[in-house]
Length: 127
Length: 371
Image (tube, rainbow over all chains, first blue to last red; front, side, top):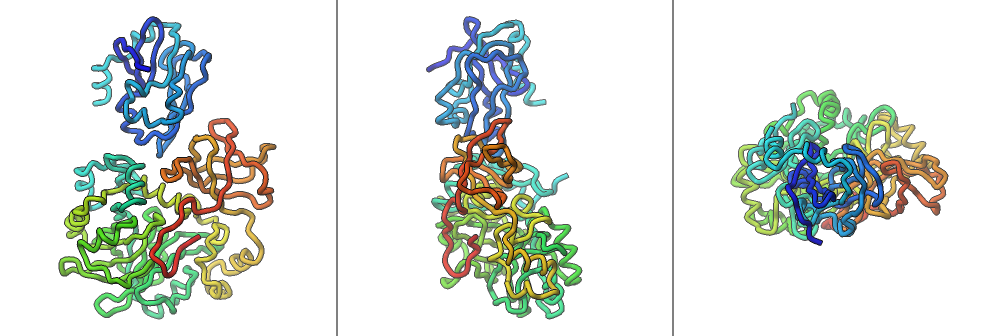
């Protein structure tokens, strides 16, 4: 399915978040997929799970290493991108669109406002 | 600070991602990524800069050979000219100081042992080499080392230098490139046919550019080198091998000269003899993850009752099998019919034991370092 984006924001852990009607879609940034290299496996979070921001909730594995994915904000996981289970490389091809990882019902929208804008994230990467 | 290899700039211009490895900044992969490089080596060929590795020349005198036989479990006196041998340096307990390739070659009508050894073990190895042969010459300060691997590597090389038609796997020779001597062996560590070339640093870049004229070859990094050697079931120092493991425990007794084990001049000979007759406690095995979760070095193996039965020493994604694979040691008391689990992120994941190698070797006959 396609993903409709509000303004995309970014975390320091190199994840992106966009919110639509109180539902956040989350993935890893294009920069993150580039530095991970070939992604070969993803352990998706459980649907229905309540999570707090900065909590480790799932893992992507590249050929070289495993790296944790954190909840960017508080909420409940309501959907995961099952197509990644068969083909995690979608994240390499299209990290910030069809490579989305999970959706969550946001319990604290102000946390979203505190995340970096695309421009801020670019600056963050240059630092 | 990690050191740079001579062609660092060349690699960066060609899109290498450089990472520190064994004290050097090394290309881990180029733009198309590890999996693509891996497949290109299996299907065509790939060029690896392995100039971080140690290269040593020792004059093959009786004295030097006698001294080295304390550490190396081969009959060095009987080495055949123009042949390479996979072997080890052993410590007092028969543990592996390093694994290496020792070859006998003539340079300017003098006979030399040419030794290639691991970058991570340079200090330990060189201490031994200089003790055995004080006038030994470190070659890696002036020569780069490249591996060309894959079924088409003979074509890639033949475009640039003339490879003797009777050169088989583990043969080695001093050949000419643009009127300069280079050392060429038919060998490598990917399970494929291939060559390793030691060439003067001055000529290294132009040589690699010449090789790249073949449009089906590509530069490959240490990432694919690791997944290729793992699929081929080949051991890597620091993973399957260390000072506390003997070659026999590592399933490499084929590489020992059995007569030398009776020679008290060989380090650890009694321990090795004993192990040869009484099976060691652990067995090196291949593992495949049943779900796709990656097996990684250091993960512990358990039986259904959560008893520790072994550990993983190397793991990666296998592009050929499209599965997560690993090499590990399994306790021989374990009933091999039973299920094996690996603890991955606090979960017990089922893994399947399999024989090594995962991918059949494709060497060009004569001799072998099959495991």
